[in-house]
Image 1 (cartoon, rainbow, N blue to C red):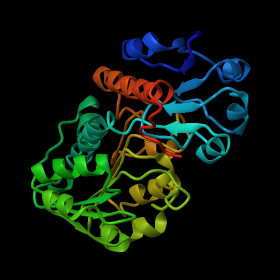
Image 2: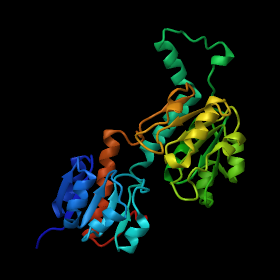
Image 3: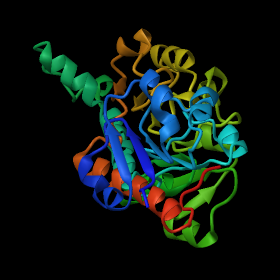
Amino acid sequence: MSKLKILVAGLVPDEGLVELKRDFAVDHQPDASRAWILKHLGEYDGLLLASTRADRELIDAGKKLKIITTFGVGYDHVDVDYARECGIVVTNCPISVRIPTAEMALTLMLATVRRLHFYDHAMRQGEWVNVSQPVNMGTSMQGKTLGVYGMGRIGAAVARFGRMLGMRVIYHNRHRVDPQLEQELAARYVDFTTLVKTADVLTLHAPALPSTRGVFNAAVFAQMKDTAYLINTARGALVNQDDLAVALRDRQIAGAGLDIFVDEPAIPMALTKLDNVVLSPHAGTGTRVARLAIAREAADNLISYLRDGQVVNRVN
């Protein structure tokens, strides 16, 4: 009996595909173009997809396709509703991205609040910044309020980091989390307006949905403290980037740390000219350990469904 065929499209560590290759005929195409995928996808039963958009055209090309798993937690590049209509399971990798992404959020929090970009840029220009002058000082995080927008796995991990730094934690979610988790994190549920008005550091961890796209805009920035910082390691679509650039330029808010953008790899030029924003190239899971763990989780998604008949990490 011939093995089911799996297409792995994108830069995925081969070491994470070892078990997958034992049970299936795996075709790893790191540099596969969209045109190549469209031409050949009809041969495959499963698809591990890194970044190519799985729209209706691509899904229709997968005539034998039974499952798509994304290489990461994000799945906004997959038309999950149409895949469901076509009987195709869509899964993601939420477990392995949790700590690496939370680490990046913490890194951006510290870098922005302690003004590392400003200091680094000045020193590279030959200037020794006098941090005894209040205008050049950063902010301490101890005793400040961390606002978490989206208290899922990653948001909860960031909340734990915040607590370690001595921060108070408030959060806003579509639904309140389990009271036991609230107690563990010493986190208080608040409405959206209270979140944005109260947070000293506001960190975003929600998916890109119709209800969340562009929710952080000029009206919201006007409600935030002028000493507050915005951190986004979730999805670029949550933030109106033009409005954010204006808010940062006019010092409506103190700063921002951004790891994701709306139209990657394009970055708004207005953001690159500011010294109160730290920019990172979607590097939240950009470590060898993290990428290997994601590959193994994606492989497990495929194995669980195609070999064992069990669906894990389903998003549709």
